[in-house]
Figure 1 (cartoon, rainbow, N blue to C red):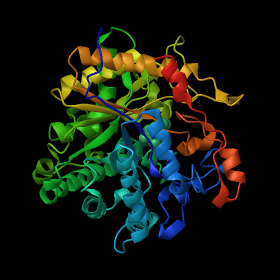
Figure 2 (figure 1 turned 180 degrees about the horizontal axis):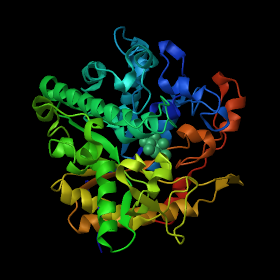
Figure 3 (figure 1 turned 180 degrees about the vertical axis):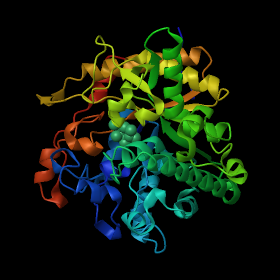
Figure 4 (figure 1 turned 90 degrees about the vertical axis):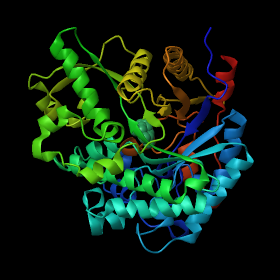
Length: 462
Ligand code: GAL
């Protein structure tokens, strides 16, 4: 019988815009998600993160819930516009104080903070004045913001993640336009990604040069779903490999190998920006660990031009550039995101990373599932979620037993929250949150009514 190592990190994850609320409180500036979600038609039922889980006011209760669950590590993100309302220049002391208090409270509860610096809520002023991730100065602005966070929290935070899922920022934010800032383009994703990588690298260089004495670790979190060749035909095998390179190697190759994958250079030509020699050196080796968010698997087949007609979102990238046709197996169970539950894909994903990047330490910084949970007699019957976690964790254990250096696992998410364009309709939480009640009550007295301790169920079932 294999077991997870004793020092394996068990955690849960959230992000600022999805849980904090208090969107305009105590000097916080607006973010691109405040703006995007207020545009009619962009988010399910016009919902926004203005109140969300009200974590800004309830973080102490939330930490008690985490403690009761036995969580040892907590991954959260800092809202850039809460500490720097316009992204640069004036500092908002009350914003810094909030995160400082949150970190102290976590440490008091023996929960180790893992802090993401950017989980998509860019200060709106940077978008309007500097073109956000497309602008020339964004990497420097990000590095300055990161420096501020290291300076104020680095005495207590020893695990940093620069960016969450730059693929999503690039493709969903600048390609498909379904996420903020809502841009729709065939070239902007590659420019945004380029600047995201430079921003990541600059922040890491500052951390290593100025804050080495803090003895922390820093890395980046990328997302990737597994791509399984639809058939044994070599063109489908190549299509699956190409899809993985356009998805994950796009961001991981520059960091682990010093440049973009050859297949992307070849297919994209001048739409893929080039790194100078100095930039390649700046980026190479800038991750102490491999952060992976993994949710699902799809079959990949050679596109034959069919992919031109598929949506970018459904295709996992700029479809016409990859020319990969994606599909699901009819026998696979789907979550309410329509993402297939395929634990063996997780194991294959881990092994692919292990082989391509020479056995890096890996942390799964997100994995989880949404189901249409309902409270009946004060309980949620979430057998499907239990099965999901059991399946994926077994896949993780298998990978470890075959030599993959998987060091930790963070469940997405600690509690139901604002699921981006899906609003509050999709429930990923280990805790149920009764948003309707939360919304109706006056803010000062709002309580969660529907907290259901799923952990009991999980514990009962091992
Ligand atoms: C990730 C993202 C999270 C969460 C999750 C579930 O892409 O980092 O914020 O929304 O997906 O959709």
